[in-house]
Image 1 (tube, rainbow, N blue to C red):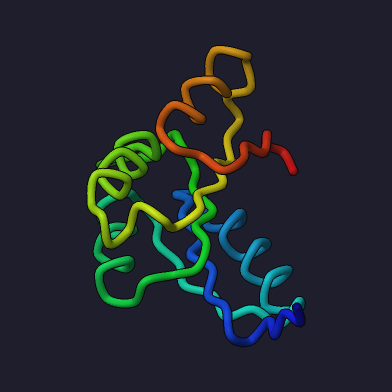
Image 2 (spheres, rainbow, N blue to C red):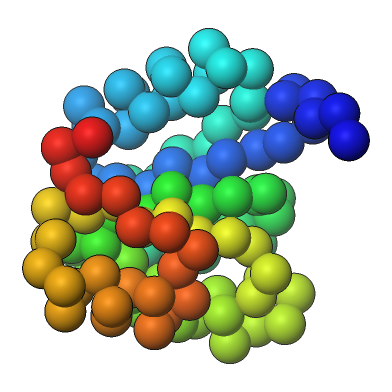
Length: 112
């Protein structure tokens, strides 16, 4: 199977501008389309406007944390199949296990 990167959109969700800019640069350079959100509420709004193929989701954010975002997405059948990769400075075994309980496909510890 051939993957055509421009056919895929990745939503980047993080409250730190520098993290969003870095990820957007790296992902765009690889040829993928990107969307961005700076908090959980905006992430849910972005998903409703255009369903992404993958979500890179920070956990510790104001307004709504990443765990709550993941839980809300996994409860909705139309979004439950979107893979979520948590990006977080929380890296204890308990934090990682909790991320997977909320439906994460993977977990990447910051700094990445």
